[in-house]
Each structure stands twice: as C-alpha cells, then as structure tokens.
Amino acid sequence: MTYLVLQTQLTDTGEWIANIFFYIIAAVAIVAALRMVTTNNVVHASLYLLVVLSAVAATYVILGAEFAAATQILVYLGAIMVLLLFGVMLTRAKIGAETDLDHDQKWIGALVAASLGAVMGYSLWEGFGDVRMPADQVPQRTEAVADEIFSTYIVPFEALSVLLLAALIGAVVVARRD
Amino acid sequence: MFLNQFLFLAAILFCIGVYGVLTRKNGVLVLMSIELILNAVNINLVAFGAFHQHLSGQVFALFVIAVAAAEVGVGLAIVLLIYRNRRSINVAEANILKG
Image 1 (cartoon, helix red, strand yellow):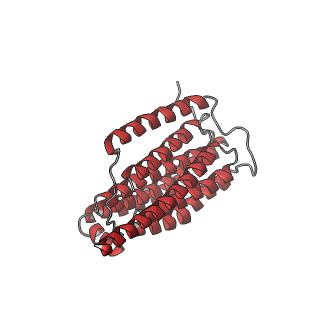
Image 2 (cartoon, chains in turn green, yellow):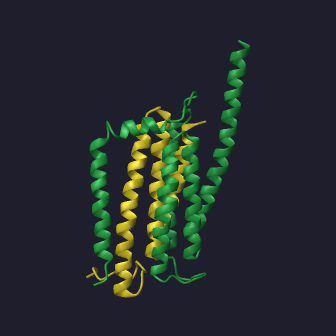
Image 3 (cartoon, chains in turn red, blue):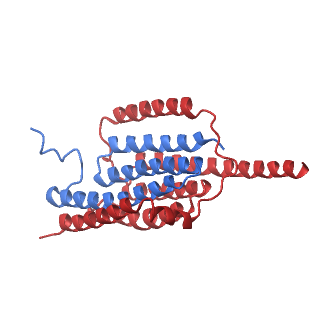
C-alpha cells in the first residue's frame, strides 16, 4: 500500500514537472510565433520560426514521440530552414528592418484568425474538456515506429518517396535558368 | 496532463499561422507561415497518437514532415521564378490573372 502511494506520488511529481516544462515550451512557442508574424525583418522572422520549430520538437519529446522529434530537428531545423534562408537571400531581402511587409487590411486577417481560434477553442473545450492523457504513458520506440511504417504503411511510404522525388525534380526544373 | 493542453497549443499556433498567411506580403514569409500551420497539425497528430497509445499518429506526423519538405521545395522554386520575372516577391503584385 505504501509502495502504491509512493508510486502515485512519484508519477504525480513527474506529471507536475512535465506540466511545468510543457507550459514553458508552449509560452516560448507562442511568443516566438507571434513575433514571427509581426516582425518587420525577414531574417528575424526565419530565426523566430527556428525557435517555434525547436519548441514543437520539445513538445514531441514530452509526448514520448522521440523519433518524430529527431526527424523534426533534422528535417525542419536542418533542411527546410536552410532552404527558406536561401529563399530569403536569393530574393535579395533587405538586411535590416523593412517597412512594407504586411498588407493594408491587417485587421481582416486578425479577425479571421481570432474567429477561427474562438471556434476551435470552443469545440476543443466542448469535446475534450477534462480528458486526461493516459497516466502510464510510455515513449513510442523507434523500432516500433519503423515496424509500423514498413508493414502497415508501406504503400503510402513508397508513394511518398515517389512524391518527394517528383517534387524535387519539379523544383529543379521550375527554378532552372535557361 | 490534459489532452487539451496540446490541442490548445496547436490551435493557437494554427491561428497565428493563418494570420501570417493572410497578412504577409513577402512570398517567403507566407511559406514560413504555412510551415507554422503544418507544425500545429503535427502536434495534434502526435498528441492523439500518444493519447490512444497508438503509433499511427507519429507515423502520420512523419508523413506530413516529408510532404512539407516537398512543398517548401516547390514553393520556393515558384517564389524564385516570380522574383526573376517580376523583380519582386510581393504576393499582392502577382495579379496578372485578374481580368
């Protein structure tokens, strides 16, 4: 009995710590995302996006999806960010602040985003009000993920490989100078 | 931990991304906001995968990451082409389809 009490106390503490980390990470992600869509410097915006992507990877770790977190860091932070920075450089963005990055009808965008947020927030609150994550949450092992990809999802995986190849060849053809 | 913690984080990031897509003029910034939206959806997928103790959530998130890589490649190629032809990536100026 004491063991059981100790056990629940331990998991409670673990959950408490995970909650603290989650809220710190969520606050960082939201602040960085807001700065990303409001800053008037293109290079700063891409660096804020880097912060958001790292925070999302940390959220994956909290959720026990370690392979997704590693892939997020490798693909998003390693590859997609470099591509976006190349885009910034090749389109000769100004170094430093720019004045003309937003449309004039900013408030319409804010209105759409706010009403979308209100609808989603209400439906999430109604649908999953006090649904708790399973207490005995175990990390999803990379081995199991690989088994799942290469058995159940083998056909979508192959289709995705072909899609990636076609998209990259298409990108080269579109962007080629001739 | 509540499931809603993750879903609300994803919803907020999604809305910020939508705001970015709607208000930004610079084509590269629009692509960045789209990445933000895709990441918000990925949080949802992984959160539901962890909630149901099932692997398919994580597998779908990986698929979305791969499709996002393809999307950003093609998107940047298009933005570069617009820049080369019009010397500007202002999406408000790319309006020659307008009658």
